[in-house]
Amino acid sequence: RRYDPNQSLSKKLTSYVASRYAGLNHDYLPIIRYKPDAVLINQGNNFDLLVHHFSLYELLARNSIPYSILCHNHAQYGQIPEKNIYPRGRVVFENAKRLYFVSKRQWHLTERRLCTTLQNAELTWNPLNLGSYETVDWPSGQVARFAVIGSLTGNKGQDTVLECLSSEKWKQR
Image (tube, rainbow, N blue to C red):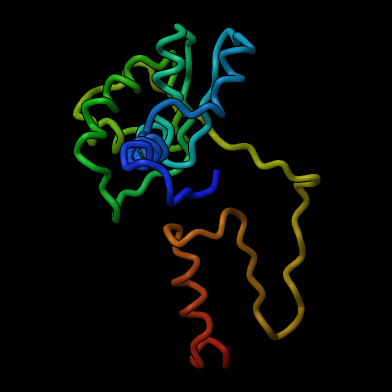
């Protein structure tokens, strides 16, 4: 929709509020139409559902659709979610059919942040989808070569590693 300068003030305000209201995301409606027996929410960060997709939880709860949550990443240091995340976080996590964490540290940190024991949680692992598990020979050249497997995001520290390796001290090794 285009901006209409001739709109009444009440229509402008209504449009402004509606476009910013963290209500129902219509992208989730096909999930309800599909009528799944259960939903697995695969989230990158422990609190993505709470911070960015809470309307998905509300839709699942309103339609009595069981859900499980798979958490991949946790920010032990750095950003702390807003305080309103924690009370509803306990409800979302405790009402999940199952919770899956990729490390014990992540699981325990989440329990500590939510001030609860998550009885429905368990540890899982991310399998490697490699075509071969054969050992690769070490390169014979003089220059070291590195490989990074995973997302290139600032919270994993690759930026720090690349900054260090680009220094003259490392370039000469």
